Length: 114
Image (cartoon, rainbow, N blue to C red; front, side):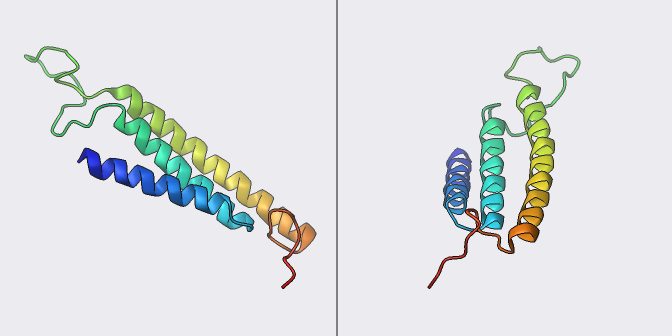
């Protein structure tokens, strides 16, 4: 399970960096989104991957970290998801405004001449 998660984080990060280096604005936005997904998975995995662990305390069980899931990474990821949606919406509005003003969606504002 840990190897699969590490590979998924690596693939998302590599894809995000590749898209960030592309010349079009929409690809840059998608790259930032993939990078934010990779960071969210990384933060979530820092809270220990524990299958069949209770998220809250149960009467009769000792309240140790071995018996419960850590709620802090879950709260951080939830906050990061909300901020990521707002950031993506803002970038899309800026993309549409830039395309309306310049007539192109290239990052530098110029079309490549073949």
